[in-house]
Length: 206
Image (cartoon, rainbow, N blue to C red):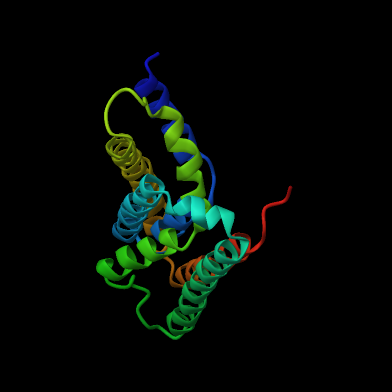
């Protein structure tokens, strides 16, 4: 296989592997519908541009070399996910007394997903370690090659995450036909976001 083919296959395998991002998209889709899931998928895919740019200019290497910077960004991302989870739990309270359980505006979900992705320094460091493995030094600008690889990563991400969002949305539509179940789904979504925040906050186990 060519280097680009190996990269493409690797990206697919990485993208479908269970992780905070895909779980977030899945949760949005089940709890708030396929359009919300697709907005989240688009947000996380857009975040790939940010991480690719950091890898291309080497800023992510500085983050890796500074334990304090890494920790601060990681905890900020964790706090943001917990904040989203608490918001979902609060809206769930309204659902129990007959209020609407509709998702927030799609633009809001899209922006929240970008922020959640950007505030995960583990993704930045992954891009720094992963993308350069497929750069050919004699084939032009390294920076441009990295950006090209990042765009491929983004395209695969939106495709895979989009498929997950659509499937999750169908499941959620079926479950939300019962009002009592709808409230429980919203509560589960809130707890999932909080759990993801805790997972991001915890250091990797060596």
